[in-house]
Length: 111
Length: 120
Image (cartoon, rainbow over all chains, first blue to last red; front, side, top):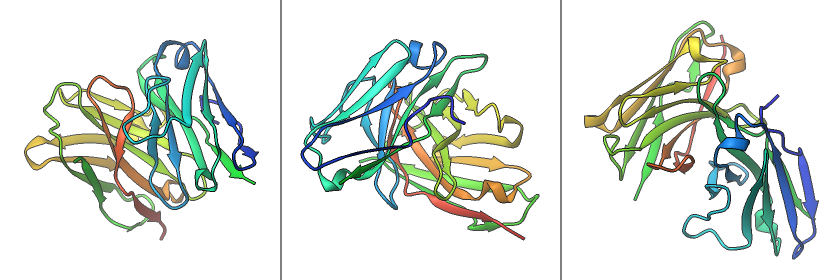
């Protein structure tokens, strides 16, 4: 079980919007920046969002991030079939000794 | 342009020690704030962070695996090495190394990954 909790799967139709949640605690999300990663089938993860809501160069503004308290959310609008992937949240956990944690991942299906 | 590439054995026997090398280009591990991390992913399962080494040689490890892991760097060779002792079939996974940008707590560039199978 991961320290960060994500729903195992979400789905939506092309063109629609979807949100993926990531729930943690005060030792991780509550006091640290959250990043989000997209992993297309058979490929390495790719950074989508850093520092809660910032997009690296080249990431379309259809992808957004937010954080409130001990939870974070990834939003994807204008869904495309190419968005079908696994999505992971990640952050530092400051309990005892600092270490990085990933969420359990969410499989996005574009129906 | 930042690139990273993992190398090492594809097959190891139970109880053996795994040594993986991450060779990178496009950045220096002597630049303030920069780090290189290792992350693994068992087939069909989630990402699991293993370790991170910073430019100043500060090292961080997964609490659950700390006793088995060692991360080192060779700045002159642009390499980071991860060793994991006492390998078990449950350690079968794709192992990735990734770049941590100075001042930003995220992994912005990833290697392609290398699949390591643990089997007798």
